[in-house]
Figure 1: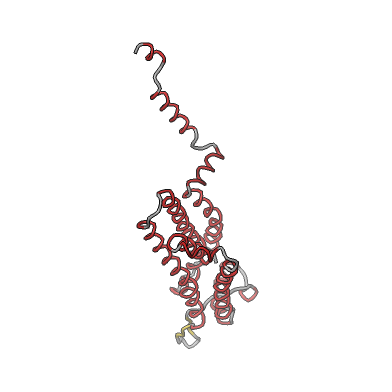
Figure 2: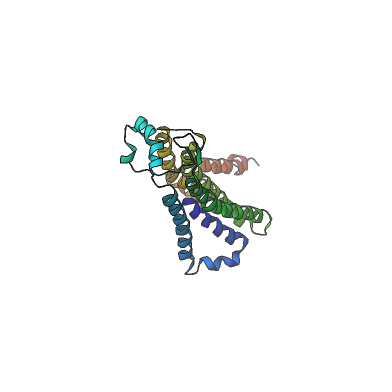
Length: 245
């Protein structure tokens, strides 16, 4: 539920920049419980949708049996599995829609993810508009812009590393595509990239953090010292020139 947590970050930045008088609510005792309830509510909807519409059934086992045996040399009934059945053809060749699984995916995509993305986009657009036109000092505008850009990248990273692999896994069966073992190769790598890239984007976009890291590793200091030394030599007259002036 990283997007749910990020939507709270967007809401906070929106209030801090667009409606600063409302910040008192984020400092109150009830702000943290409300945030926890919000995230848990979205997680509960996601979980209940999965449990109630994508649970293992004889039909799901029949559809997965051959691919699991070929790819993993295993019996599907001996494994734990969940997944939506979008459509199927019975023994008579009649086409049927899998309304149950389709409804579960629709609730997750258009309900949970749709709501969080709508909140993120709304807050993001209003933040961008306010940063362009609102009266504030240049230093404050620059800092808020840095934080806003970092937040945007923090949202893009889990969307690519976490949600894109899940989308590919759940969407390809709609078109009758069996990705098989390929899912095992890219999904773990993508998921593991998230905790690595997330702090790096903060360090990159927020100048104070970047300077602190450069100072800790001794990066970017030599050039500054050389520049100041060269500038000093340029503006300071030598003793020889003073004596001949």
